[in-house]
Image 1 (cartoon, rainbow, N blue to C red):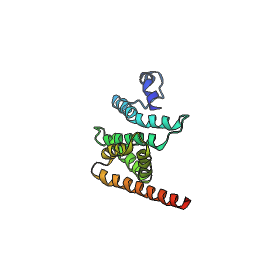
Image 2: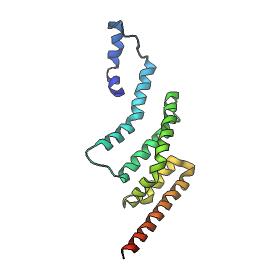
Image 3: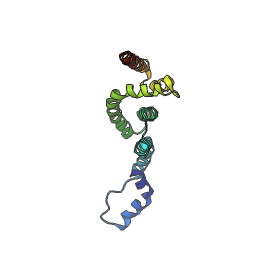
Length: 159
């Protein structure tokens, strides 16, 4: 919706001259911030499109996209715009709240994909978690060991 407003920027500017009730004209810095916000929100749009498509994405396909969104938000913390930094802090807090619950399961799905194995998990965890990436990697490793143990127990019950 914001991207559509940018298309009509000139019309909004001209509306001030022709419409006396139009009092909330954005200045150039507001339009610049809107342009930057559109660029920053593109990864979310792409991820939403991916989820909303006719094909049903599996965790091993979604994991790298979600990680890329988190990496993007990390970059926002260094923005020269305080508004973007504030938005990033709130979004990261909300993201981490939900990511904590599902990151292990999604990482296991990626490891079980023969194309990626642990390399993709290591790559994204190093970008997302930086100094605590090894502890996050260990959590995934423990989940995999638990999964193998459960599989072995199930196999012995069948025999």
